Amino acid sequence: MKNGQTALTSENTVQQALAKGTCPICALVRAYQNEAIERLNSSGMKSVCNYHAWSIAAWSPGAGVINVFLQMLEHPLGSEGDVSDVWLSCDVCALLREHERTRLEEFARELQRKNFREWVERYGTVCRIHARPLMAMLPESEAAMIASVIARNTDELKESLEAFLLSLSEGKHGGGSILGKAAEFLVAQRGLTR
Ligand SMILES: [Zn+2]
Ligand SMILES: [Zn+2]
Image (tube, rainbow, N blue to C red; front, side, top):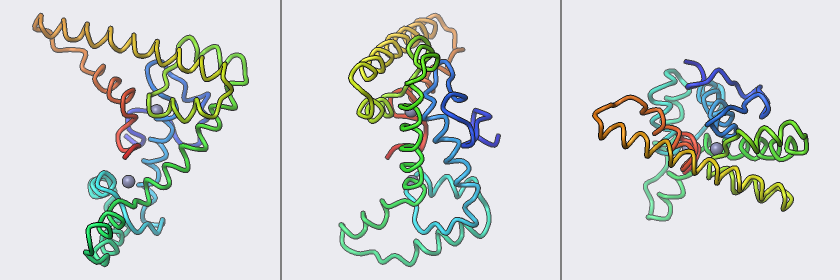
């Protein structure tokens, strides 16, 4: 399972990452995150956040992980302010912010193409975390289109969650994948936001 649930890599374009029910920015930044963690041994990372400390502890055995943890152990336990400065700065998160920015700019550019725009308008999903910075990059009419995509996504998710609730009350337990979709839509994919 190289890139989580998907076969995408960070070499793919936003166009290639379009899929019903998932945010393409999330899918690509997540693929990039997985690759960054796999490259850890040669990355020279010095500090990671809670989520990424556990990710590298679980995923990436080898000198890279040990070196990151050894470097973090050198940080002094200072005043409250110092501690949060040290522990909240994360080299993986910083890389993700940068990649996310590049992908949002690519998405905004692609919206100039009619086919791309029409597909997004009709079938696309953009999570609530990525919708805001995306809309801030767009001219008013395209920002309004993304707002209508979010409204459609919200209605679809509510409907699916309510149907799931109903099927649970009838003793059926299938269909849990909707919960992952709801989590992504609300807070973006795992590990992408702090
Ligand atoms: Zn997203
Ligand atoms: Zn992090």
